[in-house]
Length: 53
Image 1 (cartoon, rainbow, N blue to C red):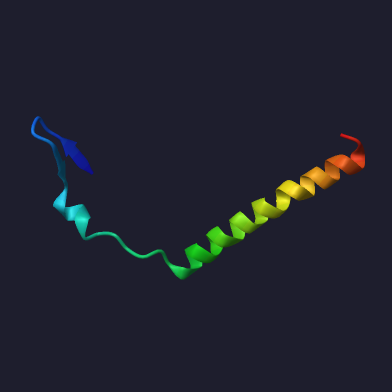
Image 2 (spheres, rainbow, N blue to C red):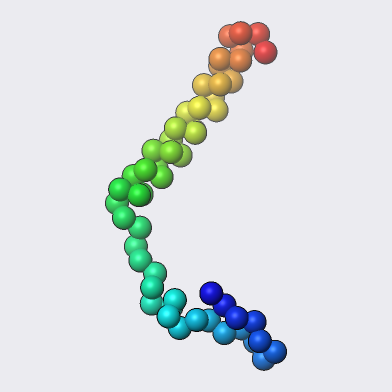
């Protein structure tokens, strides 16, 4: 969190060291979701072409 003051912006020091690396399972799930959506778009275009849209 940041706090806006008259002299500038202060960053909460508790949050500076709290960044963690993403877990491998979370990263794999994100990659799978992106791959699914990337395959869905052309698949829907082909499906639409087949049914006459």
